[in-house]
Image (cartoon, rainbow, N blue to C red; front, side, top):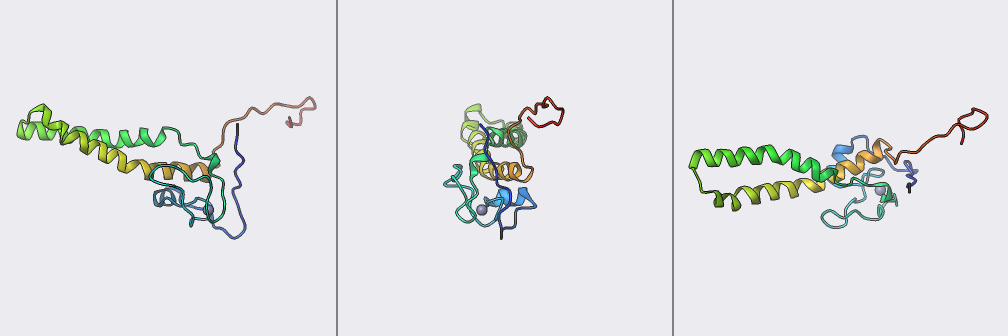
Length: 140
Ligand SMILES: [Zn+2]
């Protein structure tokens, strides 16, 4: 199933910087409306320009990027703490693990906003097969 995306609407200035618009959690078409209803749940549509967010499907992209970005600093922190203070391993349950979880959760919303705005900006849609017609015109 594909969703039709209306990329333009009269009177609105679509984003030219999906990173900035996504981090701010704003609508990619009008840059005024909100993307989120709560922490991570997308609204059904923009309350200003009525852009249907049905096209937005970042899947597990935000989680992948959050884990990738946080993993190396978290591991470095754990190693530094272990080497510097020779802490018992259980202490990492109260330092490294919460720090890793908090940093990952803090990154999810801006990353999800960035990916949704990028889908709009780059007109990313589900792939479709184009079949050549019998007359060779390329029209299906
Ligand atoms: Zn909007």
